[in-house]
Amino acid sequence: MSSTGGTIRKKAAFACSLAALMLASASHAQTDFKVTLLGTASPAPRVDRFGPSTLVEAGEQKLLFDAGRGVPIRLRQLNVPIGKITALFITHYHSDHTSGIPDVWLTGWLSAPYGRRTAPFRVIGPVGAKALMSNLEKAYALDIKIRIEDEKLPQEGIATAVEEFDKDGVVYDNNGVKVIAFAVEHGAAIKPAVGYRVEYKGRSVTLSGDTRYDENVVKHGTGTDLLIHEVGSARPELLATSVPVQRIIAHHTTPREAGQVFSRAKPKMAVYAHIVLLSSDKIPEPTLEEIVAEVNRTKLWLQNEQLSFWERQMKVRGRELERAQAELFSARLSKIQQASAAQQMAVQRAHHAIREAEEKLRVLKKWGRELENRTDPMVKEIEQLHGFISTDMSRAISYLNEIIKSLQAYSELSAGLPSAPTARAAESPDPPLVEPSSEKLP
Ligand SMILES: [Zn+2]
Ligand SMILES: [Zn+2]
Image (cartoon, rainbow, N blue to C red; front, side, top):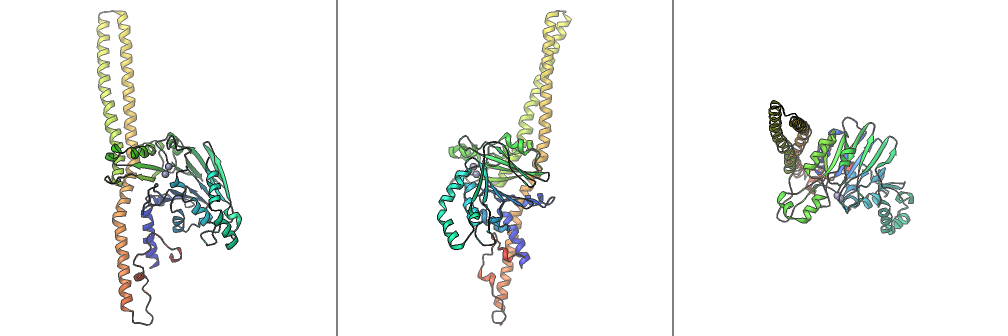
């Protein structure tokens, strides 16, 4: 039972974190550089996704990027002791990225196997990290005092070591692991806001943080192995009518813009995290299919609108060239030398315009082909993932229900026997699908 249960639990956990499945394949090549999306939601409380947080494991080091809602639960699912986090990196100070910090900090200090931190809790972030942590120390002063007195927990384990930075550059360099911070544009009032690039053994992962379309993400994400990008989407009818929704979407990157970032930065793999799906009482949030359709629309826009514009330009400019050449020809015939010089200039200008249109067309066609190459695998993966959620998940659950039924039948059959096993499954008809207990794992 334990191995079957373990598989199902793993599948269920994957379903919780949209991109964990895709990342699993990324980690095959180099097993000691591993990225896990612990949470891919936004401030919206959701049952299917926890708050924003990403765990990057490089060798022995465990780096946590943001700590949103539920992080200690997700770490426990992975069997990663909360007290063993090497350092926490903060992207910005929106509460959805920081509300899990006191939980990671305080729970990681407890004497249970998931805690036991004995060195100061290391926090690295843009300006604001020191104020945040010292205020948390004040807020939890009584709990800290009580646990030191009552549980004899070590004082050093609850201390904090905070480093702040105010410009782009290396913010962490330890034992072959380098972390580079770079500013991103999350909104005029939302400052500071940064993304990070982690480098280890010639590989890299880049996290956009919360941002609008930003050239700095393209710059630091160029050629990265894994680009984790945020995305925000609302149905067009909601976007057209709601000012608050317009404001929120303006702070984020639309699927169309993310497609442009991916096509320019050319990461080996791109995944979405911090998926902001907006809705109202009347208009539901966009679905995964609609986000995929949006990516496809980007391709169509590039291929049709831009391409047809420059194709039209080619025709217009071609006609201009013909006209200029005809004028030059007739001017030569009539041997009016001065006019002929002016007309030669006109022909040159028309040639130049044609060359410009040809170059634009060439670039657009190349861009279109590359975008297709990059987005097609992404679209396929999203479709596969969606297929997995709608088919395999329900298969897994019905399979589990079958097991429970046969256990119940077995317990009923053997109820009268002296060595009857206790009907565990019957006692808990709700199996721990998303909360695996490490003790039960093989
Ligand atoms: Zn956020
Ligand atoms: Zn934010």
